[in-house]
Length: 255
Image 1 (cartoon, helix red, strand yellow):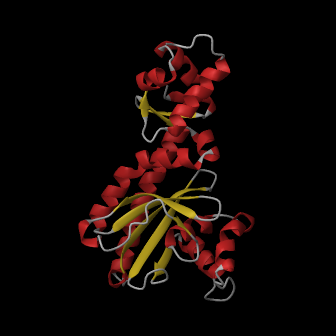
Image 2 (cartoon, rainbow, N blue to C red):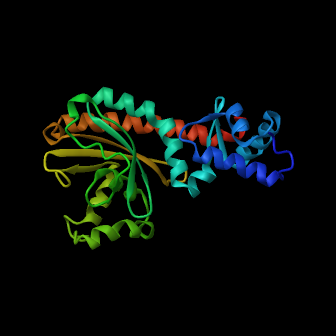
Image 3 (cartoon, rainbow, N blue to C red):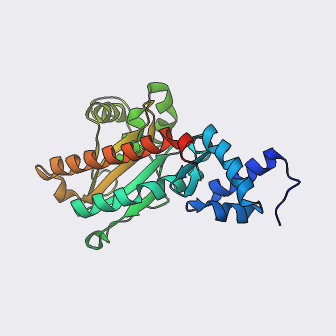
C-alpha cells in the first residue's frame, strides 16, 4: 500500500536507500513498488533527488548519484559496475588479457568487477579483494592521483609490512612515476609470473573515480606488447571517463 502519510523526507530517504542498496539499476516502477509509493509521487521525488545529485538517471533506470557515491562505497561499486562492464569486456577482448575495475577504500583499493578470458583461468581474479598499494598496480594508479596528504592512509599498510617508502626503488618513487606517466606497472611483485598495468579514471576535479587494470602473464608484458597494452588501456579509460563525466554532468537533465 502506498504510504501517503510519510513525510517528504521519508519518501526521499526511502528512495535513496533502495537505489543505494540495489545491485543493479532500477526502473521507476520497481522503485515505486519497493517503497510502496505511487509512481507519480515517486517520479516527483526523484526529480528533486536527481537535481540535487543523490540519484542518477540513465535512460529509464536509476542509480546512485554523485552525492551517494561520495558517502557509500557499496553504492559506488554497484553503480560503477553497471556503467563500466561493457568497457571492461571490450578491453579484455581487444587485448586477450584479464581486466579488472577497482575503487579506493579507506587504506586499499577494492576489485569490484573482473573479466577474465578462459586462457587465463589459472590467474586469481581477486574480485571483492582489498589490495594494498605496494603490491598491486590498481591501487598504485589510484593513489598516484592523490596529493601527498591524501596518500598517507594508503602508505600505512606498506609501512606495516616493512616495504620501503624512500629511495629509487621505494613506494614513493613508484607513485611519482605512475603520476608522471599515467600508468602503474607491476611485474612479479605479488605473484612472480604475473604482471599488470593500470590507469586511473579521474573526475573533472582530478579525483580518482576508478581504475582499469590489465592483468596477464609476465612474459606478455615485454615491449612492444607493453606499449600496445598501454595504448588500449588509454583508449578504454578515456572512453570510460567520457561516459562517467557525461552522465554525472547531465544528471540534472535526465529525469
